Image 1 (cartoon, rainbow, N blue to C red):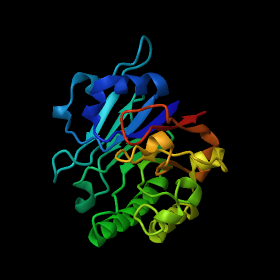
Image 2 (image 1 turned 120 degrees about the horizontal axis):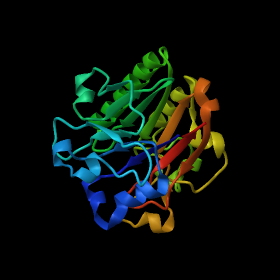
Image 3 (image 1 turned 90 degrees about the vertical axis):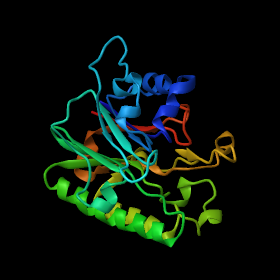
Image 4 (image 1 turned 135 degrees about the horizontal axis):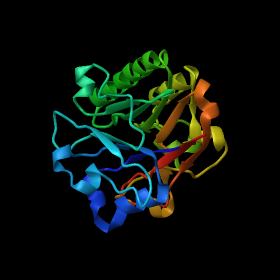
Length: 261
């Protein structure tokens, strides 16, 4: 079983130039999580509501959580060929849930959580919002973990270590690489979650999942690794591999994936 995650920076924009089809054919996910969809389900065409599965394979069931306070902002989606036992659409905290940043699916032996974590830019209030979201999120998934193991994925909007971005020194004072943001990722690891990509590729450099569009940074691979699959330590033996897919275009991020045994 392959699970993928992708910040699409606008789901409807993938309709052009075959980006959507390239993702499905190139990654071939059984379950996939999208962030920054920027759309309500009633704005989507059939290709996004019922994606093609090729000549074989079960159809995808699609689940959406949209932003309630700002049209065309944020939003997450989860597509699954395996029917979830249960789907949840937030953490039960209105100030966070209203932005459509969280969707979770319960499967037979694990929870899969898809989250689009806030960006800490636009001033200290938004950074404070991001840090409070971080803390609430970890508490929430730890509660779920008491039921069964947790995998969580998405755009975390923070690079953890210097190896995870092209220019660490230049970005030490910028959101996405601030000490307090990186310290939260330390907390995640201390709580017993494993960064799946680093688990399989501990020393791999220049492996990024985000590049700034305005400076054409992808052409020069001046990027950041801010998209993750974190896996509860007791479940890591089930993970066969973890990958980044820089050959898939259509967003300022590229997809990432894990394969389960």
